[in-house]
Each structure stands twice: as structure tokens, then as C-alpha cells.
Amino acid sequence: MQDASLQLQDDARALPFPIPANVYAERVVSVTHYTDRLFSFRITRPQSFRFRSGEFVMIGLPNAEKPVFRAYSIASPAWDDELEFFSIKVPDGPLTSELQKIAPGDVVLLRQKSTGTLVLDALTPGKRLFLIGTGTGLAPFASLVRDPETYEKFDQVILTNTCRDAAELAYGNELFSAACDDPLIGELTGGRLTYYASTTRQETAHMGRITTLIESGKLFTDLGIAPFDPATDRVMICGSMDMIRDVKALVEAAGFKEGSNSAPAEFVVERAFVG
Ligand code: A2P
Image: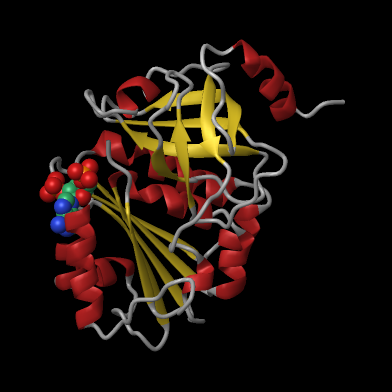
């Protein structure tokens, strides 16, 4: 029997434009709209497509001879049969203005190589892993909190999700509930995955930018945990350029050194996709 993506490569001959070289054509499985700014979608996964949890891949639509591709963090874990993405909708964005209209059965293009620095390999061993995400910057962490390897390497995983308002937190809230309730992943996350959600433009249980919550120490006192310690903690940061700059300055002030795939260290950063 042919696998679904090979079948699709055949079907895709019927597309208005040829599929570019080194690109997979995959089918949309489901789409969830959270707000007028945020949505997630799942697509079929080519059997030969391998990635490390936390990496990103280039995504496009088959709507031009030379389609626009944008970097998207893969939100699903490496063991998942499908690929999941969490996206912003920008009304005049070159890709998202069209991507936000996808429906199950539509074709999405995927470049064959994934890459990125928000991977466990870019961090030296530690005990607590802080995943600091704002907006769609949560996506790579949605992959990592569902990956058993994360719990092999760290005793405690602290996921923070800061958005403008309560509705925007929905993706992260559902992710956390599912990670706790899942029969397989729940065994690993039980008592070891902590979730902290805050909003900046609407009153909710926890208010404020993550930078303010770290600086004031409120993040740590609310969770009843010790503050940042480079001897035991590792940090991953994903959000807007400004957010990355500001959180990075805070962890550097706390004594953390930035790592990469070739030189693992104590924290890593990556800009969440916009546009
Ligand atoms: P704010 O509402 O104060 O701008 P966005 O969706 O625009 O990327 O924002 C996601 C979250 O990141 C918002 O809560 C936003 O707060 C926050 N944010 C924006 N800039 C920074 C920054 N420099 N440091 C920390 N958080 C930030």
C-alpha cells in the first residue's frame, strides 16, 4: 500500500504549479482557530521526514511558481504521525494572509530539512528546564514538553506562556491539560511538568510580562520554586525579537551562557515566526 504522502505527491500533479525541488506536498488534517490572531493546524507527515523536537521547518502554499516560504517551529513531538504548527494570522502577511484560510484536505508545502537551536542537544546537562514562550513562541515548546527525551534529561520542566489576553492562552492551556492526561506522556509529566500562564492586556489569575515576573521574582514565588541558578537550570526562550532581547538580558545577568548546536551551554533562543 502506498503511504499517504506518496499518494499525495501523485495527486499533487493536479496542482496549478509544479512542486518545487526538495519540497514535500502534504495534506491538511485539521485546523483550530483560537482568536482572530492565532490558529493551529495539523498536516500529514512524510514517512521520510525526521526532525528533533524544538526544530523549525520552512512552510509554504502551492499558490505560485515560486511560493513564499516561512520558518515554522514544529509544535508536535518527534514521535507523532502528523505535524502540528501554531501560527499567527497577519492580515497582509505574505504567507499567513493565505495560510489562515486552509481547510482539511488542502495542500501545504514543506521543505525537506528542519533545523534550529531550541533543541536539547544545544544545552549542557541540568536539573530544571525553563521553557519561556510568548505568543506563537510556545510552538517549539509544545513539541518538547511532549517528548520523552525531555524528561530523560531533566527532573523538572517549567513551561511559561504569556499572551495578550485569556483567549490567546487557549493553545497552551489545552497543551498542558493534554500532556497531563495523555496515557503515555502523562506518566512522564506527572509532578514534573509545571505550567505558568500570564496575560498582559486582560485581567487573569497571573498578570504581567514574563520579564517583569522574572525580575520581581513573582514567577518563582507563585510556583514555590527557587530562582534561576545556572548551576542547575537551563533555559529556552522563544518570542518576538524584543522579548528575546529582554529575557536574554535577564538570564545573562543571572550568569547563564548562550549555547548552540556546536557549543552547548546554559540557554538558547529563537525568534518566533511573524508574517
Ligand atoms: P504586551 O501586551 O505588553 O506587548 P505578541 O503576540 O505581540 O508577540 O505578544 C505576546 C506577549 O509577549 C504579550 O503578552 C506581550 O506583552 C509580550 N511581550 C512583548 N514584548 C515583550 C518584551 N520585550 N519582553 C517581554 N514580553 C514581551
